[in-house]
Amino acid sequence: MSAACALGCAPLRYGDETRPGALEDVPRAVDRGEPPPVVVDDVLLLDRADGSADVDLPAAPDVVTAADSPEGALPDVPRSDAGSSQRFCAPGVPGCGLVEVAAATVTLGDPEAQSASALQPDQRVSAFAIDRYEVTVARFRRYWASPGPYAPTTLVDYPGQRRFAVVDTVVEPTSRAAMSGCNWSRAPADREDHPINCVSWVTAMSFCVWDGGRLPTEAEWELAARGAEGRPWPWGSTDDPARVCDGRLPGRAGTCAVDDPAFLAGATPAGVAQMVGNVWEWCADRYGPFALGGTGCWQGVARTDPVCAVVVGDIRTLRGGAWINPQPRLLRAASRAAQAPGAPEPGLGFRCARTR
Image (tube, rainbow, N blue to C red; front, top):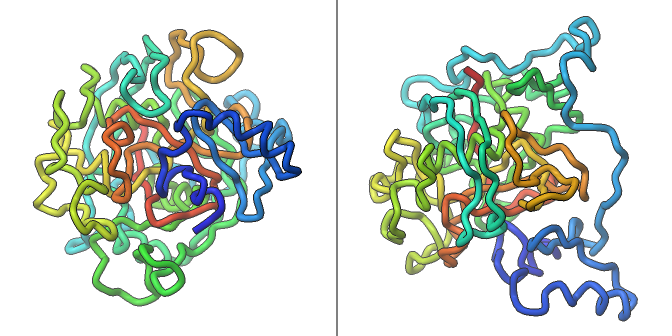
């Protein structure tokens, strides 16, 4: 386990960062001559196993407008296809299916959820489609065996004429042989219908682009999970541990199949499955605290198709809670967490979205 997660960061054993006195660890660490942890909102994490962390990164923006990048200047490589089906799906491949989500104006956040107490009203989200299930090992295997996999060196299209700059290296997920709890194996095995986990943010985004989509924004993810009415849990207004693959299940030692019939009642009314539990899910956004005012991404003001690109340490947003989490606060549909993009863990996977 990484040093980050040993301290309680998302996704593994996440929750200790909100204990009394957590923020006091910063000056104490400095007094001891140790590298200080990174504190973002109420998320405490160290980005690397050696205890160091990246902050004050170069100001190259993640999101640029169409005017900033004329069409002729873009690399000639695939982008997300607004009308595409799931390219790495086929008959018999588990985890296939899309759910259409209508445009809506919503309030993001929930005072009872992790890192989401400062409500963000009047967030306008355009129509999109989202994967019915978390991306499975079987779907990812078809991608990994394709003529790629390719690094997403293109600018990924997002609503509002935004293009998300993603330039990094695609890496193979950590295998079961290398880390307990990971689902990936070089040859098909017994977890093909489980979510692909132990995967980096860049690899997740690359899969989504080549599958015909992209990672969802935080706002899209929350709309799909909570609906326009803002349900506390995907299925409704009352917690029910029997609907969720999480750490409250006796003997839970890993992920569940994405279409496990035991958890069908945990889907949204529209049929999006396991939006809480199983694995935390990567979103496109960099992590920014929900706030009222200030200069960050989330200031409590109306926005259209928001996506956060402010650099405050290189950490990306996670949504949904994981199989290892027993805390109900982490499993509410609005709960938020964060992780360094190159730090895959057994409690971390993704699903894709498509612009409509």
